Length: 206
Image 1 (cartoon, rainbow, N blue to C red):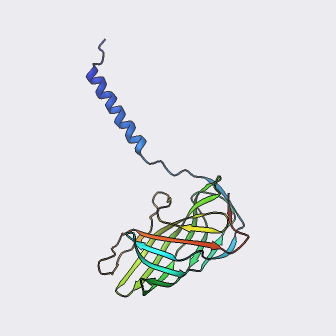
Image 2 (cartoon, rainbow, N blue to C red):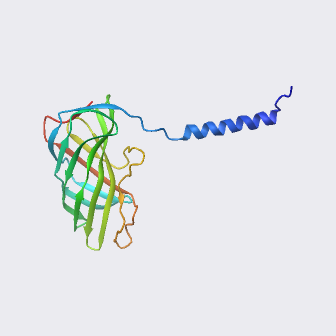
Image 3 (cartoon, rainbow, N blue to C red):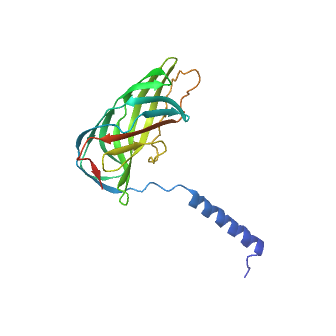
């Protein structure tokens, strides 16, 4: 009976190590989670505090002093990622430096992606976003999905880089941008803002 030599054994072990490393490095699929939403209904919210800020490639392109929001939230049991309502959002009194800017469009549905029972904070996103930025010499569209967290006390905290399910695109510049070469299709867009829902009561995720 033949036995495996030390060199062959070393090669085999090295191969197993590489394969194991590949599997360990592979991203895990997003785990689904059962959540319950109570106090569903229609709500209004505003910046608290302002402003709402839009960046492209990390550079601030606009700050908006006012941003009234209307939300429609559904009650019930859901499995994440779950569409639990929709939002309409207006960005007004917007400036790029001292220059006026117009931002128009829609921000889509509210989707909850997870809930932390320890902190009572949910991760969510809005989308699909369809906004148009217009300023002197600069016009471009914003597409994708905006991530935020919700604290069950009516607070919505938008910041770039939040969790998104596989296949869901983050905010980015759409096709056809004309902005002196400063903005190009596919450039990452960030939306940072804090909103407070008028209440109580507030929608509650658990």
